[in-house]
Length: 164
Image: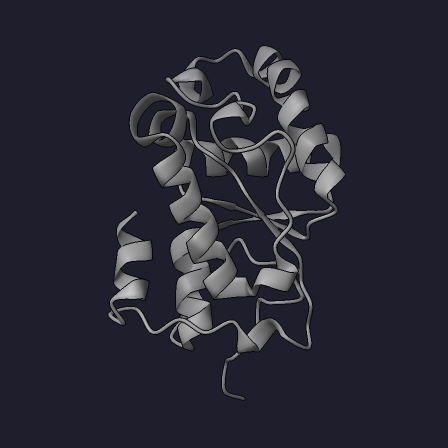
């Protein structure tokens, strides 16, 4: 929610022009702890506001269902560290299918547990999407994403904006 506030206040001068010609599609994960259990629809709307400002409204594809009704990724609450990998995959298949249905090239995740789980689901099930933290895309949109901060970007963005 602070990212949205800072963008509105002009403290984070993000710009989606970088994606106008690329037309890379993005979706966003609504983390259980942040959206369903804590701040609700206000947080969900803030996530979408930031995503659209960073990647372009025309390049944002929402999941269905979304916001407080979005599906859990299956990695939170310590489940990532539980050692129950096959169970985590089975539970996470619902989230994987939901992301695939958007046709998005990237899933933006504001939560580290969601990021790890959604990235792992793509690897396990052969998903073609990439998983990116909000901060990575904010920095990319501001032209300040460092070379060593691109680990989770796909080949379409890994070198984007770097000087030759």
